[in-house]
Image (cartoon, rainbow, N blue to C red):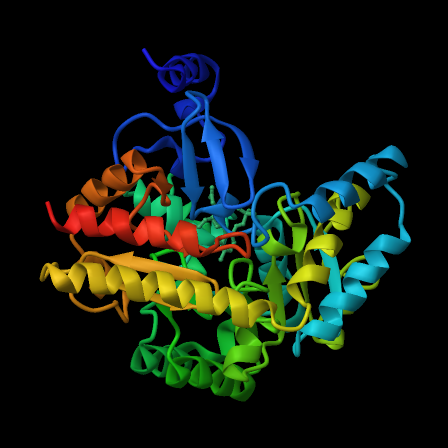
Length: 424
Ligand code: KE4
């Protein structure tokens, strides 16, 4: 029995599924999850000592790669001054100022400890600000595990085949309208019929939780126009895309300014940080200023914020995204060439430093097209890559991530491994 298998058996006696987040359990792809011991740059090593090139990057946060010296030093030195105060610190102001400077839609921001906290609060804020009950989300998008959002969700919920979770009461789900991603007609119809009841719309501007499906300009433009017309709050969930697809997130890429933005992942650099922020008049409704309550013991934790600031300082340096986007493009082009050479029904696409691989001829534009992909072929690909020391997300419905630490050698190895797979 391998060390990974031993650890997995032991983990399952005390942790549901042996994991602290379902998608890690390898249930969709089969096999034994790898238990990791150490990471460095683009690599990490499992309990059996095998090295992998990591394209999950802790699901997005590790845009600088594992254990970047500047980030580790920021954490170490901050921790020596105290782990948490439960009181304001100057560091939190620095991060708030940086986020508001970087993102067009952010006038004020509050830090929390996860993306879920950010999105569930943004919805509560939209309802508190408008006094309306309904929210709109899109099939295949995932916004964390808040009750109102676990309706036809993506990511782990989709991976495990239960996009609408048990335990979410019908009353809660009643006010959640789920529409088709990139479907402008459905959107216009929903607003025509319910415009006055819609508190807010939450969307992944580039969806990464049904694998990668970029929002079309028509779709996101229609969202902006309809929310403005009907007085609904437009929430860009940029937990994944924030500082991943560009220095100003997806809102900068598309030139569309949301009313609220939610953030996570990269802004913590691997430590627990989330954030929600946006228009000053809306943020003015959040406690202690206004009637919408939200709180958190470790919100703005100085050690986590130090990791986030050290990460963003490097990410926002000139040329960072040009290099990251270039490396990601070379990877995607190489994978497409490898498949094309063998006539395989496969396509890969990317936006900035995030990418998707699909076992279908062309990258999907909708949830329905994602579901047409050959999931079994993906699972075979996943395990073949694992054998080659290449670690993709253990799900056909997750995006992949390149870091600044992924060099030409890692990308070449990944492409060569794919060539061997397609040559089988
Ligand atoms: P967290 O609560 O996991 O920090 O963030 C929830 C969330 C919100 N919004 C978007 C767009 C997200 O992608 C996420 C979390 N993403 C998943 C991966 N697709 C986290 C991985 C996991 O659930 O283990």
